[in-house]
Image (cartoon, rainbow, N blue to C red; front, top):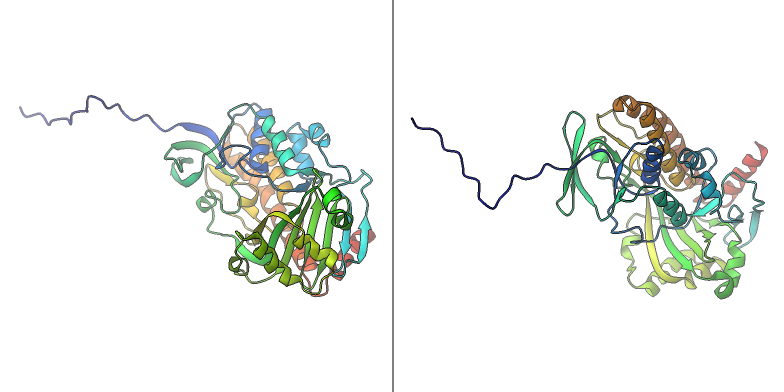
Length: 396
């Protein structure tokens, strides 16, 4: 009898091991992803976090953040880290000044320590969250290149180095250009019409005392003619400045930012006629000059429930920074998702549906506020619309 032959197995080969499986995989170790992982840990639930950076120190984490009582601070309470956060806030960081293009101070607010939006260095906040997680929670140097459903709410994730894993719950906390979002939505971020150029003045009190006095102890708005300077004092004594303007999307691409001197000159030409006290924020800047085109997802971005996957933070609702809510929303998203998963431990889909029911209207309202704030700051009659907005807050 002829029996069909079975292909021989090479003597030195072994069956390939199945891909590792993680019940919960969070893509992105930003503030939102880390808050989610921490809240889950508080409730005894393990999550694996994957981040493209080689290490926590691979890049700087940006400037100061004002953490709001009803969102970011609520998330820190859920993470059982609120007291540790308060120990790291920047005294005086809630101060604010509004100037016109002639450097005239039109509104000034001090920081008496009683406000509900204390400032903290983004790097300090991220370190607080990282330090609260069990060792090995974050898998560094793990850049996601593709994701795909494999059935039953399970997803397969492929990393840049060829590693593959599967997960029962895939959370996209991976920012504006999320690799997870296409599983849920075809939306992509669009240019808002505003471009930033980031600049720094180091050791400001000693090396740039006039600029230090101009900015004050907290946040600076110096605006007019659809452009301006937005800045704040860092906890290390430096000044972090954004030269910002309403301009065509290709303006930044026409500047060689590898030539720092030429880049500063190109930005300076946009502020002809502005007070020298303000233009020195460009001419006296030190270190790299960094372009930041501002993008946003459509207001009201949402998706139909897809088993085994969701989004948080910028991956879900990227918006311009003019409501001051980006980091706060990412953190409260992470906290809400973590709490919902803990409450519905036996029904992940019910947990995701409950989370998204809160996520969508909150994100839509804030995105609308952010878009309105953009038009207030970048206005032909600025700074008057900004002054009017704060006057309305005072009257409320």
